[in-house]
Image 1: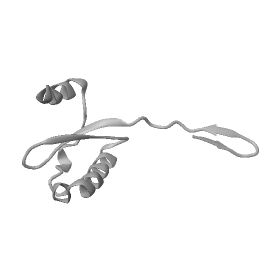
Image 2 (image 1 turned 180 degrees about the vertical axis):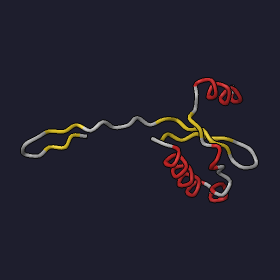
Image 3 (image 1 turned 90 degrees about the vertical axis):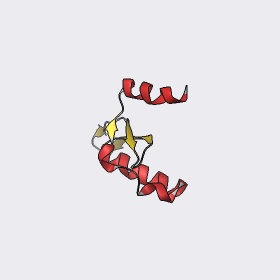
Image 4 (image 1 turned 45 degrees about the horizontal axis):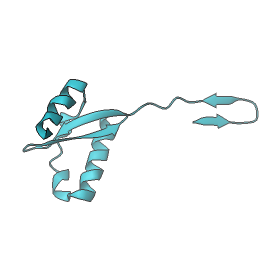
Length: 80
């Protein structure tokens, strides 16, 4: 994002999103892209509120973590 005024030009860095994985209480997992855990949790709740309201209460807030390559490979191996 570039802010410009009459005397100076500033460039602000945009933080890249990270992938966060999380679990549901009772089993299951998913992931969200966000800049931090708080935002990831908020996005997950908004997502499940729209798609399946019953899952919002089952999103385990304590389980949010940055997804490592090894973890994603392991989680996705369930689908192969």
